[in-house]
Amino acid sequence: MKLVIVLCLVALAWADKDATIINQQFEINEDGSYEAQHETSNGILADESGVSYPGNEPETGSYAKTGSYSYDWEGVTYTVTWTADENGYSAQGDHLPK
View 1 (cartoon, rainbow, N blue to C red):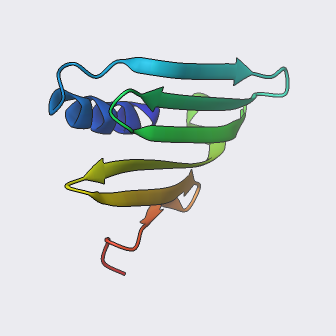
View 2 (view 1 turned 45 degrees about the vertical axis):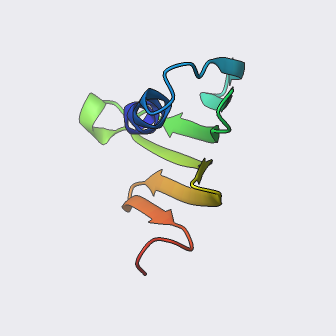
């Protein structure tokens, strides 16, 4: 999931090749939870938090993640909030179909 968000950010940053990361924070906690935030010089903001619940076998483990990202496109700010858990991935945003 994090790869999907990173790819989205890379795609948006590619439109502005001079964009740089101006703030990046990542914290992993002992209980398996984490928090991450990123901000680029061209106005992209992203945050994500989650926790993994390991099982006895790799396929039995699960996770719960939430996050959001926002960016400006032609003077309009778009924001997407999302969740990813045992029920799959779900994204919401005013510009996305419901």
